[in-house]
Image 1 (cartoon, rainbow, N blue to C red):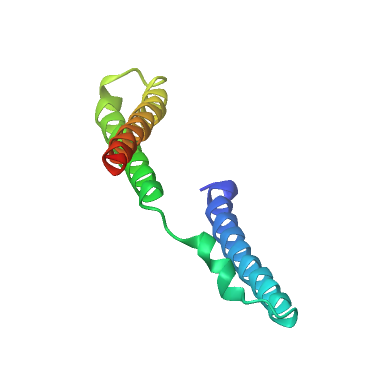
Image 2 (tube, one colour; image 1 turned 60 degrees about the vertical axis):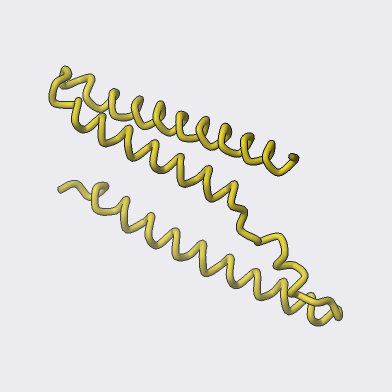
Length: 116
């Protein structure tokens, strides 16, 4: 196995964990600065509310990408060897985009119901 094949997942995991640690560290510094100035740090947490629209959008995107990957994997043996990877990537993009379009349609329908 090539060294790059081993190094990529290790670097990704270490980089992700480092990013999480630094984000939490700077968030703590921000909270301490707010407390020292007499502000309430809990007011800052209102912007972190999870929106159902974002959850729907991400869920349909992931489902569409997974469906595209599944269909691409099924169709790959029936295609030319040089075209097999391209069909998987293109189907992931097509079905991911279809998931985003479905999310948009559902959100617009929900907004019309809210207005009525």
